[in-house]
Length: 278
Image (cartoon, rainbow, N blue to C red; front, side, top):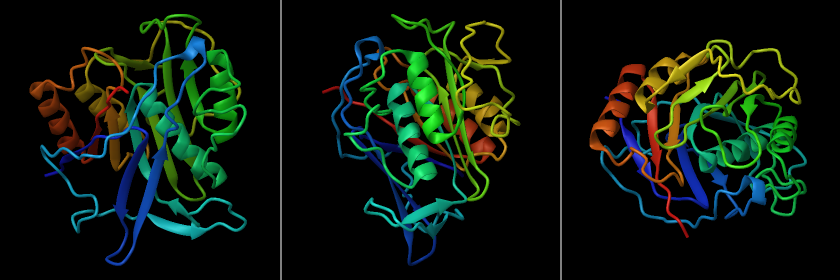
């Protein structure tokens, strides 16, 4: 049976993928305790290190069957010297999870982590003051496909959307982010079976807030079955997180059971990340 394991981070989330008996690949999904520009603000976070264990799954154990490999990248300035390949992972959650997606795909594309001094900074939003700026700049830097729109001011969950798809065919890396804000539905415009390969320029971000969505899913479990599992290639792992949204339903055992059943049925390993406020 596939299982979930829970992480309690947030400034730093670590995932370990076993590659061979002797070697494992370490990913740090870095977040700089971000303080966003006023129009983008969602708050600041601090890390926790404890790991909770209902359905605990040890990602370093021999149970992991994942064909992640690495290649060397010359001229790197960061501390790691390996670039992953054969990585298929999806993220689903709020802005906390989105920034982890952006951090990872920036590394996959540029072979360097985003630095706190970078301007504009796609993890802290320093130098970016509008959502369209953020979508265009971040998508241009990481070369992903962004089915994205959000107007100024307080977020309208019905008329905004952010689903992102990164594909590196040379290294066989495919990473997706599906926005889910607490109990709100997921929705978007692109067929999951072609989302990684859709022809769209990085800066051609959708500004149309039309509610004519191609897909809408009310629950975490339905989003997993009907969208995440239908991505091509299908993710091996799903990182999901309710982030800073009050009243989310991830504390409900019925919801968690439904998520676990969806993961088991689709053959995806789940990583449930909790969030704590500073």
